[in-house]
Length: 266
Length: 134
Image (cartoon, each protein chain N blue to C red):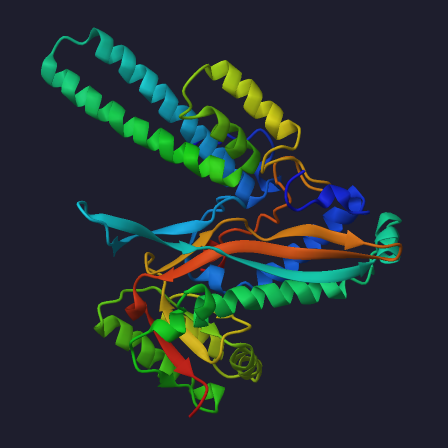
């Protein structure tokens, strides 16, 4: 048994399979940052830090002393509680089990990962893509119909800065909804128009404030995964079991110039 | 063009399994090439030809290593067993047996978890989503 302690949970193999699949589906749709960054790993739960290749000089008589700098991985965990009766129902073949707490936990940890990658995690000494960008942000404006203008402006700005494509557009929840609604109203589909400008994908990024255009050329945004997203067991009583979704990672921006933020404000 | 790396109908296999099979086939081909160059080098007398073949074999070492690393990253149980065998001093067979036993008994990261495929260690296996988003 490993650190997830799944073998101690009052959950059948069939139950675990349903929970894992439900978590996988919910997480995959919301993990926007992983669609845009360079993903390294997973290297395992015992990986603790990312090598930065830098040193800090130390004072020591008679010798030159330096200490290596590393970026410690953060652990993100989202706990949730399920009814054991619902899980017994899964064992009997029920297909409408109430797994809402799992769905909500999956969304919380996906947002946590997205926020760390896009906006940073100051307490963990990690800078985000949006906050690191040295470029002036472009205003998205109120109308989604007008989004191609700032998006094209951001792409042109990256090109003129020597940052090659293809490019991707990450849209925060509100911005994505507005784009999707506009696309449904007929005329030239807005999503297709934006894809042609970017030559890359448009992703729904819950947790992102506003939007951001990033280069997908590689080598700019580095996600170092220790333990990938996993379900683990915490405790249970006669009626309920407490589980969690957990991961460990670090994130670094190697080339801040490879992104341009798009702000929601006009 | 042949599709010999598949032992099941390719259209029934998930994309990740097809990729895995391709890299397994590639690993086999690189190992064969290493063996062929080893034999050629053993009998070649021309120093210039020898230098070229040694250089070519070095390329195959690199290709084999990259293939192997890819496969290990995608297969936690294999990675865990390999961790106990590769780059370890001492008896290779002993390391192999001990590493396999540790993985099977649940002592390692790759121990089979309830309700999961052996070797998945409870991970949801989501990993890199970049390709899917492009």
